[in-house]
Length: 302
Length: 214
Picture 1 (spheres, rainbow over the protein chains, first blue to last red):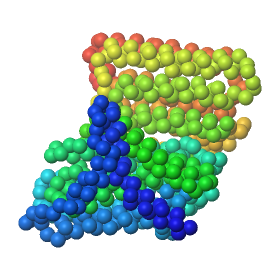
Picture 2 (cartoon, rainbow over the protein chains, first blue to last red; picture 1 turned 180 degrees about the vertical axis):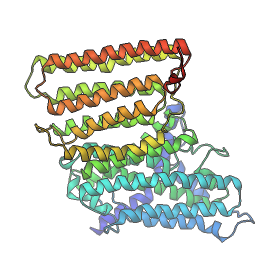
Picture 3 (cartoon, rainbow over the protein chains, first blue to last red; picture 1 turned 90 degrees about the vertical axis):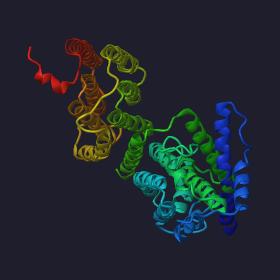
């Protein structure tokens, strides 16, 4: 049993940067380019960890704290998320709330370290990040509440690895509604198109990238790595909602890993085929996610 | 089977949500067309008396009328109208989307209170019907363009049809075809009326029509 928990954690730690590689490769294929190697994000991380950090003289210890706390928090979150039928390292009733708010904590530290630089530009990014996540959070929690009510469990491990996850006990509409809603939250939280464009640098409309402009070297490596981990973990939740299990632990595990990579391909397709939404239209997209989550919850509780 | 009916009903609810949230008239017409096709599917799924003329004729007519002919007529009107967007509705899109789950809860409560003479095929039929009716009425009240109001009327009628599915499964084909003919004529006349209003007054904002003196 302990072996499965440790394998789950190892998969998260080792495989998560690969998601970026897959997204970039999908976008490259759509654009007719060869694209960077699949393992490019590992090389980038290695490069960043071997560099020295440069700190602006106007920043204080808060700025240095941000990336480290962010990585620590995201590691803590990684212990809560099951994958396929592999249980999470820690599981208790109500850990869905802890899961959502650990990401909140991470966001808080990113935001205050961005504000600490004193740059007006980063302040703007911080304000947008906070506004959009305030709208994304209820969609995520209500969606998870619907799944939690459907599967009679208050912990992520219970929800995604319990006996009710087999295909026979499926209520398809609820699963589809919640997973669509969480997919929108996934795009918003990981700052992908159509909410934010990760490729634009120094544009007035960007959100997440602008907050980490002043970070360099290992700090930026921490931020890149923690955003990869965050993407994997949210993806694991989405896969847990949608993909049914078939009983065998190892088949389920490989199925879930493949599903996360399929999700990455899907993100790549969305990014290649859509433009970023106008900033004013983003809240509307998140409101749609909220409406879908509430609809799913109503259907379960009915 | 019930699962499939439920899925269709939820898709109908989702099309209503899309209508409430989108400002482009083209998208709205497309969504109403999808709703019409879903109604055809619902008619096909709720029929349980085997392969009859009822089973084949009604879904075909519904899909042809609501999924193809109405959208075609409305798209043609839209092309002549030179409007693409619903601008400044009385109730904004975000507000409409936030309000709609509340309305849905009320509809589900109403559905649980209502005692029908016959058992509905799914407990979601009555809420979905009431929700469509409410959305149709809401579109008529809260939007300004005449075309959106026609769409509201169509959604309202769709809601009544969904309600009919739940209680009047033994309805004669002729009655249902008669209703469809009525709706067809209504949409036809409304399209022509909107076209003429637009040609006379250069706009179709219904809130400004009461200022006209003939």
